Image (cartoon, rainbow, N blue to C red; front, side, top):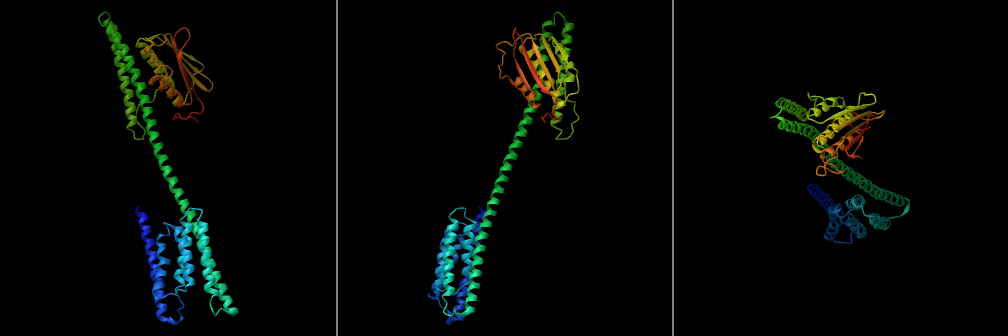
Length: 406
């Protein structure tokens, strides 16, 4: 709004200044050489038509076609009436033609400028060839020179108007693209924040759900045998204590990462598939019979794949504890040429009350996200003869350390 008012104010200043200079020129000529004045109007008539010719230029950017369509014929009348002001009035028609090309996007701008040029050209021809002293070679030379100069000005005002319009459109397009990039950048930033929240939520779910489930099973077992077998109850409570410490340690790791502000955080390393034996041992201590089978030759895996495999097994075992009543479970780890396959199979399907369906709960959604993060896939469901299986295939080639696929 401020820029628009500033431009309008500057346009008014230009228009009023041009009128003032033209009016002053008329006054000087009528006062100094009154015998050479051939105007068909009285002095006040010259001033009025000069105002009508110049003041509309204040709207040349607001209504460029109307201004050019008005100034063009009026300029022809101005010349026909022989108003004694040849210079500023010529500048007025050139400026009107320029504005029609520069500030209008309508296709009619060509027609309006053409009409203005035609009227102005006829007026110039009349003013040049209508003179009584136009005779001989010298007069013809001056006439040709005058026509050439005016034709050059008309051509320049037309071409400069088109060039200014292209520049204006380019500037508007650059501004639009800058705004679009700003919006896209803000959207990417919001998406990055959302992805980070999802990642943190996934980590918290995996850590808390597993350890709390294990502690719940161990505490329930300790409560049942507290009176009959205090020694085993004490061992179970010790396992609860150990699980709680591990949960707190992993929570401290996550909090330490969040507080690192992009710097290297001095926290414990992320678990990988190499830590599977410790995970299975903790689950066994919680009372879940688990067997681990490894097929193929173990090798070093990308960190993202190792972490995803560990978390998938962890979540699958947690679901067995919560939903399958501690059924016998087998974890199968297969090292293939270009992938790592994980299967967690138990001998009891979830009860109808605990069944989450194909869409899965947060745990199953988290396992899918873990697999997808490294370009893998995950499947789960009941198996024939009873039981439940979680199967994941994680590619081990074309994976960057941050988990993105190449």
